[in-house]
Every structure is written in C-alpha cells, then in structure tokens.
Image (cartoon, rainbow over the protein chains, first blue to last red):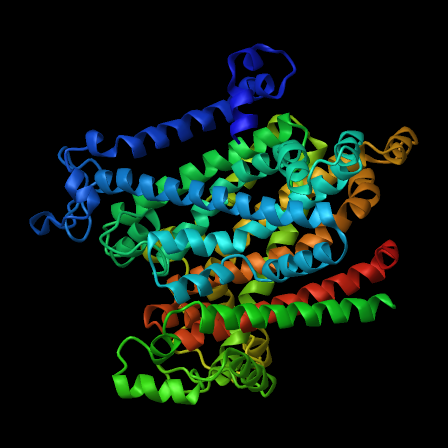
Length: 297
Length: 333
C-alpha cells in the first residue's frame, strides 16, 4: 500500500488527469468513503480526548447508570454495566482498525513470501506450496478462523492470528500469478544472466513490481476483515470483556434488544456497517480506477 | 488422466489436508490439548482421563494415524456437554442447516442474477448506481446484526413473523427427511407448510443478503464483458428484442463464472448460518457450534468445522463436475 497509495495520494498524481488517483478523486462516492474512513481513524487515534468517559471506554463499569437511554450526558445511552456507548464505540474503533490493518498486513507478508517463492521457482516447490494453499482455501470463510481462535483462546491478538491464517492464501495465489507473468520478462532474464542471486531478484525486482494488485485487493478486504472479526467476537471468540469491541457490544446488547434497549447493539451494528461499507466502497472504486478486474470473492 | 478421476483425487487430497490442518490446530497448537478437550470445568482426574483416552502422550505421528482411523470409522469424538457421540448430533442437526443454506443460495441466485443483468444493461445510469449501492450494503452489514434488527421489527414489534425456531410449538408432523419444507408437505396440511415457511423467511432473507450482493456484482461484471462482444452487436442490429438479447443470448455466456461462484455462495450461506442460527434459535449445526463455543466444548468445535468443510469440498467437486458437463473446455484445461 505504501508505494501505490502514497503515490496515489501524492499531490502531483492527484492533479494528473487520467491517473488512477485523479479518477479516484473524481468519484464522489469513493471520496466520501475515504473521508468516513479518515474520520474513523482519527476517532480511534484520539479516542481518549474525544469523550469525557475515557475510562468507561476502556472498560470501567458505572453500575449506577445501567441501561440509560440516549440523553444529553450519554448521547447514545449506556450499556448493561453503565458504560457510555459513545466512549465504547470510540475505543471499539481502535480494536476494529487494529485487527483490520493487522490481519491484512501480516497476511500480505505471508502471502507474498509464499506466492513469490512458488511462482519464481516453479516445479515441485510451486506444486507443494499451491496445494497447501488450496487446502486452506477449502475451508468456508470464518470456519478456519473459528477453529484457530477456539484453539488459541479468545483475545484480540488471537483474533488477528486466527483471521490471518484463513486470509493469506488469497494473496499467495494472487502474487504467484503476478510473478509467473513477470518471470519471463526481459529485465528479470537480464538480472538472472548477470548472476544476481535469487533472493535479490525476488525481493528487489519481482515483488515490488507485483504488489499493486495485491494492495488494491488488500484495501478492498479491510471491510471483510472487520465483518469477520465482529462475527468472531459476537460468538465469543474475539476480544473479551471488558475490552471494547463492536461485535462484542452487539452480543452484549443482544439480550436487551427485544426488551426495548436497542441502542447498545443498534449503535455498534451501525458502526460496523458504516466502516465496512466505507472500506468496501473505497476498494470498489480503486478496483475500477486502476482497471483491475473486480475479484470473484 | 480422465477429468473425473483427476478431480476426485485432488478433492481427496484436499480433504486429507483439511483433516491434517484441523488435527494440527486441535492437537499441536494448544499448549495442553487435554485440558482443552476436557473442557473448562474438568477436574484434574478428568483431564488425565482425556489424556489417556486420546492417547495425547503418544508421539504425534501415532496420534495422527489413530485420529485418521477414528475419522474413517465416523468417530468424531464425544461432546462432553451432551455426552453424546458428535457424529450422531451432527447427523441430526445437519438437515436444519442445509435447508437454510440451500434456500439462501437459491434466493440469492434468483435475485442476484436478474438484478445483475439489469445493472449491466443500465450501466452507469441511476438504476445501476442504486443496485451497486445495494450490493455494497448487503456485503457490508454484519449478518447477525441484520438478523437482530429484522427479528426486532418484523417479529417482535410488528408480529408479522415468528420470533424464532423452525415451527410453532403446536405444529407437529413426522420428521422423516429433516427438511421441514418437505416433511410438512408430506403431512398433507397446508397449515403446517405455511407455518414452516413463516419460520424460514427471516433467517433465509438474512443469509441470502451477502451472497445476493456477491452474485449481483459478479453477474454485472461478466454481463458487461459479454455485452461488448460482436455477436451481441450483431443480434441487436438484426433487430432482436433487447429482452431476448439480454436474457437469452448474453446471460447464457455470462453465467459460466456464476456457476463457479455458486460454491462460494453456498459457503457464505453455511458460514452465516453459523452466526444467524443462534439469533433465531434455529436447531442446526450453526447453533450447535455456537453453543459449543460458549461452553468451550472443544471436540465439538473442531468436529463440526471439519464436517462442514468436507461437505463444502464435496459441493465444490459436484459443481465442478456439473461445470465440466456444461462447458467442455473445462475438461481440457
């Protein structure tokens, strides 16, 4: 992402008509979504400064104010142990973004290593690595993450590990396909003829040239990771109380929804949906402006 | 090698790989598998009992072969919560989940395909934009939350649909197949069928949302490609009605990628069943798994995930064979 996205948002790129960044900026929906994401990131970064109830956001209960409806003091009400919902949402944004970026970055690193090695060396190495990748892809989404999370025990860190385990194969495949098409290009052949060692060819010449579609895909995946993480914590395999997590808030608020206290689960669900939608929209628009075909996932 | 045989062998290898991963996650990753398997409230003696039963002190290779041997005999272990063989539990519960997943897949195809065609034919016009936003929204809403919302408004507040379960308590019929749509029809009472349908509406709607968005986007994309082909231009110039061009001539070729996504659609339905069933108190594999997680019933978690994955691999195999039947080019590649 660093290379492409910084390049994309670089000033001169923004002003170059026809460039991907220029086209992105002209897409109203894409820009709106990017602004929403920026707001969420800011909210997560400055969460303690944005609410008078920072310690409640971190998990301290306030049992005298349980299940209050929205009011001037608590804009979105309080939860079942009296914590301010706005504060919980702000701190929950930290968890959500941490998981989303953590998973995507680690999964891309693993996927790039495996995919590049498989594609570059080919032969039996490729065969073995890709069959292993196929096995990981054989699990329905979520199920592998569930088993790994159950085995490691629920926590935010283990959520990242669990989702990463089920996520890297997609990038491995994508990188491999890129490497296969790059491998026969003249500049790689030249490097090989000059006796540049394999690891340097892969690291310096192939991977940097193969990354663009991977980062585009990774950006588009952030929303899906957020939904997966929310699902895991909803069933009790993610962040544990008193940690702040949107999926967990929906689970905690679930038993109160039918009783009329909709604001706990309601507001957390809106937060997940809006952030996931924003990431999905940005991903979709980037796909379109970079002329990469939308994936089939 | 014939395509069928080649495909069967790769599927078998994948199943073996899936078993191996599950084994590794269950037995090698945890620091003390015995205490995981024995559950959170086990006394030390019970943990030792589990250790002996599962042979956890044996070398890992011995454990692996005996694990494979047990699976080959359909022995998935015993749930320490229900004290029943997990295999029996899963056999009892699977039809309930399969009924939901198949219906959700069906609904998402019936909605996603025509909507995708409409979006492609109105490319970059308001209707396309609206549909695209709809597709985006449907893949962005957490399914379990959508389930809670629909339950709150359509069932609890408005009372149009039942809150939860597969049937009303007073509706009884023989559960011959486990698929209640079929069973209630066999009972010959329209009232029974209607009751079952009313219970299906909410969970199926929620589960169909994600795959509908996925299908819509995919069909839109492949239709746009196909609509640029010369033969479509020729058909239009020949004065063939636009409806025929879209749904007869173009869709036929745009459907091939949709067939490959059918497997994925089914996978998403199964995955979301796992989050949705618990909301609607639906007695299927999803609730079974979720309840197992709550009770930390570890043997059930791994076994249920394994069975669902193997079913998914078989569904994919079946779809590939169908695909090969329809499109002979697949066999040659």
